[in-house]
Image (cartoon, rainbow, N blue to C red; front, top):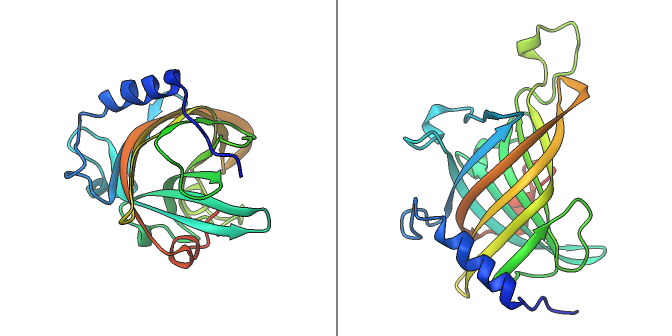
Length: 211
């Protein structure tokens, strides 16, 4: 399988984006992430206030794995607000990335709607009562919240540790819907950094979530 070889420009981009992540060093956020997310210009809050930093950024558990699909291996990075077990099939809040192949090397990878060899897909979800679609229920009892997918941006991998740690940062623009009103599109942005630890595929993907 062809390997992604970062160009000088891509390496310069890695350095530039890494320089913007001084809000927390690797020791501060081992196995965790910090991020700012907006939807239609409004800052996203955590479902639980305890899962925000003092600056109001989302925070939580950062894990990655490699799964086998019918098309070969895929790298999956999940950033779960709170922790992995806070996101279940009916209530969840996370940012996720997927890329064809195994664990990527250090470099800058384009966030795309339909990525080719070296690109990645990105998504953001913040949904409550996902299993409640009955229109007879009150609005605050039905499924609600944004589902977005990345349309442009960059996932930067700054370090890959053989003991099972991947560090990096990301910035992407997104587009999607509010699940309570699927006829209207919304736009969003996500910007953050992570130090993700390895987790087995069954635990990461067994949440009933579309990562």
